[in-house]
Image (cartoon, rainbow over all chains, first blue to last red; front, top):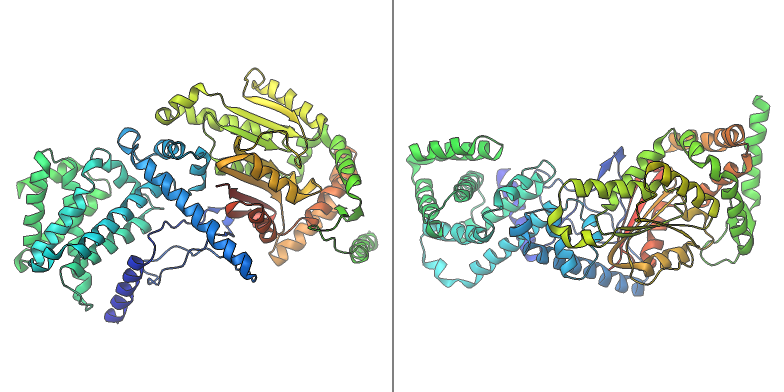
Length: 291
Length: 290
């Protein structure tokens, strides 16, 4: 049973990679479950219900072929414009944070009315998710193009890829705590969790692990924990070029491949989760340094 | 009394059967409630209705919707997401309900201190145009604006005009709202294409309108309330049964949620969505101009 579920999840993840990296919106719930009609078509991902909580939009299928040909173009146009707004907004994140204000400034840059921000259901979360999806795409491109990865041991490969991924966040490190808090909001957790799960899966595949047995979930959890703890460690790292963070990362990956340290790793994960849920960050760092 | 009720319902059904279903999209005839009238007559008859109800418009709105229309308009404005420096057009908004909410929302945005992005636009003035075809409704709105303290603010601009041929330039508005008004126009398509014309790229169209209830049992209760209670209430409070009879009949003539959404898309809008409130008694449609 686990094998089947894992295979479905992996195939879903693969589908996610090959498909267009887009943003999905959740219908708003006011007074009653809302009935939504949209001309934009979002193809649902074949991911098990356990991780997929979004409801696919119903689409307007037109019987006329000429009408359907015109229907395709406007949808692409809208998504293109939205992508342009989000891309332009990223250049304001350092100044304005992951906020509606950055989105408004981005919309103005591309010559659109700031009203378009009102059409993004979750606004600043959309911006964070766009950034995360972009980083994932760059990571996938590097995995495909970097031949030297194949000569590395699994632990070195994993360390290198996580470092590569976290370096993408380095320019935004001063505002990343805000992005993390946005991702931790209840309405945004399903999407951010899925983004991280896909990221972890991709790293394991790059390390050469294509197994889909019961251990797959344990490996995913461990690597997710390593990524999260390193990400949080990075937030307060003031060493040159985050040297301490990379040392921390290498040590954690080495621990993960040492059976004796498995229990300790689970503790790190638990602490990372509790930190993400609002525990004192300084307390967490203190505990890490004591070990 | 029971016999009278049965007779009234039977009369309604017979009347419905006798009148053919109007083809709103292509026919030169149009509908005024359940009656078939010439195009020219509809504008005049609708004008008569709103001239008649202007003074007691808000009171009747509160009574008919048990105060819910305030929440519906709040929801409409929250979906609009107003911002300082906005150029906005509110059509059929004569009494100013939606415009006042937009201004209050913009003031809140300023207080929240989203100052970074709007620094340059704070110098650019917010302009909320309230457009209505009926001057009496506009006068009610102006008086209420003075009472609320919006009168001295230069942000509100009151314009008498027809939704089917607006007097604004192309690509000049950030937002366009029409609340409880598009049902009364003669050509819905013309209103939609005009809205698309005046909006800037990235501008949004939002429409709040009484719509169709789909849930079976609730639909029966709603029908009874519409055809028995509201006209009687209109007669009692505003001494005007005919106007409110027209109101409930025109709701039934309005296109369904899906059909109206496709009309909005046909006018050139993208990302067209709608949200039902109170099981479809009211629907908020939205579209984006690119």
